[in-house]
Image 1 (cartoon, rainbow, N blue to C red):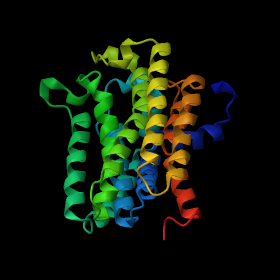
Image 2 (spheres, rainbow, N blue to C red; image 1 turned 60 degrees about the horizontal axis):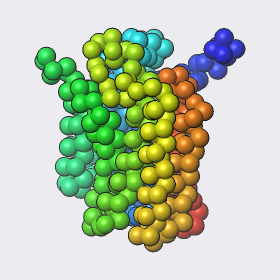
Image 3 (tube, rainbow, N blue to C red; image 1 turned 90 degrees about the vertical axis):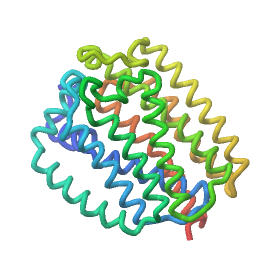
Length: 290
């Protein structure tokens, strides 16, 4: 299959799959989804800071402090990073400047929550002596912490920045986001099982067969669809939750048709996590965003 792809198509595909900016775009999509579903005002500084912060975290993971297991798990990405190191340095500088400008105008409570989330990301990125990277040794807790960090950031930060109270709908949406994002993280862990074993990391998903991982992801996505139904009874625009649940339905199909250990299929799975951007577009179309 790879041999049938032209050199030019690989080039643009590699940028989407290996550059960290698309991951920052997923963060923006999730933030906008919260704005739409909870009907809270959009903060441009938060969107900019979220995009830059997440992009920088993933840039550091891929370029500044690459994991030794990536030599097995992501050889194409490592080669792309090495051949584009100059661009990534420029990219990092631009992200720090833009992100810093956004941070200085955020509300203090938003900054405090964001700092805590960055600290969790640091546990995933930075080795601590003989412990290595602490988060990677947590087995089943690791994907929950990673998905939970995404869910908390995507749900809590827009509400705090809008100065709105944390209502039951906020917490329910956070739980829904967790089970929507968690299957993608588990599939990524399973895809990395060979390199993890090479360096002595024993992940929970890596010990399972592909079929069991897919059934586990299916169960979580069914729970996410049920969560969307539950949250729809707590918000002003229930229809938007049905639109948002479309992402879980598409992920259900992707779980059984895509190969999570193939970089291009991983890109598709990541893009589907950004489905809340569609929710935000529908919200804009019906006048939720003023």
